[in-house]
Image (cartoon, rainbow, N blue to C red; front, side):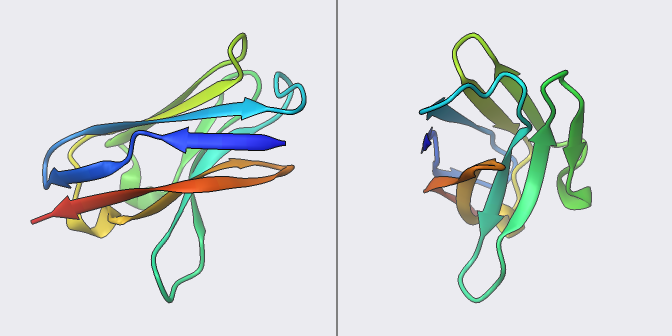
Amino acid sequence: VQLQASGGGLVQAGESLRLSCAASGRTFTNTVMGWGRQVPGKERELVATITASGSSHYLDSVKGRFTISRDNDKNMVYLEMNHLEPADTAIYYCYTPFGWGQGTQVTVSS
């Protein structure tokens, strides 16, 4: 299983970013997918997940600002992040039950 995340960067507070994750190595159509994030010294946390049927769940701190979506035909999962805050600064990782992908850095300056 390979999960290739992209789309991170440096933005100012209030701006937006869209993360993308390309999954390969197996079929993900019937699998939950998601995004997690981690800052140095803290445990990785799941930010958002989306089931095969499209039901999504979010970490309380990102509800209303982040939106997860997926394209099963392309084996892609996305995370639209709006109204970014400095507290959102972290390395973001693509998630499946089969493992985590490599991360993409998101830095939000105040």
